[in-house]
Length: 314
Image 1 (cartoon, rainbow, N blue to C red):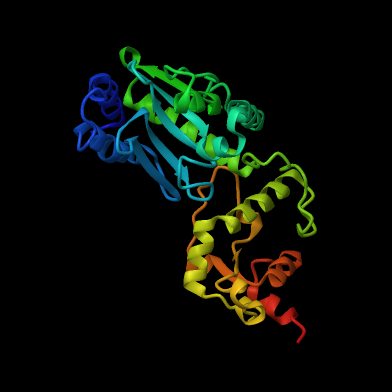
Image 2: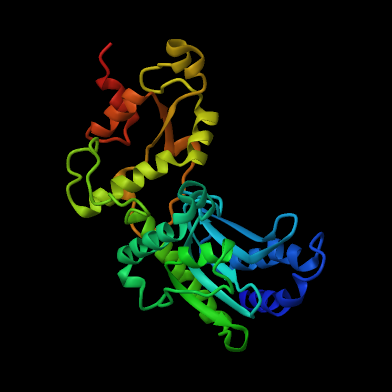
């Protein structure tokens, strides 16, 4: 199997398949399984990414898709931003797109959804001008301007498009996918969809004045705030602060039950644009109370938990 074969099969069969019964349809299974696996295999280093394909849930989707999620950003197509293959509703065309989660946006902004998505897509393009020559397509047509096709079209920031008759070689497809993944990683390092990324956080450590240091710090905090990482850190390390031993439930009762914050122990300076961010919950995270978490970020080395403990005054 190869990436080109996978895309060809979906484009070839979609026109007829989505007119048939959805339940247990072989193309739906193929999109969720083998086709998604081919996308994963096409990436040189899939570490730190999740992959999912969908042809619908209970019934055919208007737009089938195969997505690549950076675990630091999102693990679902409903929120955040991600790289995705979007197949046209009826024509044998597929778009490789740096796109956004539309479901969460629509639930918040209702009739203004498309305006918000287009504005965020423009923000993405402003953050990634160096990728524009290699991902030149800034508007896509999915066959409809209503529903999810319209949302995906509005959320598209940059990418490239292929028709069945002009589908390039596997080598070119993989190169384009790697470029999209590189843009994805660069976007996260440059602030993602945060419109205030150029501002220094109020609690940023001293020495974070340069743009690169600001971006590293933003990336560091994004990793800490990732809900999957936080849940895993709490499950592994418990809910007692590893610096001062404070437990929220003991002090606040029921409202504090299970609460603790995750702190990323990798040095901020080690976070570089373009590198895959992966982490080991056991060694790369600590759990801290809110006070200790803010204070360790003000210390000379936020990655040195042992040294921070020595600063505590009891």
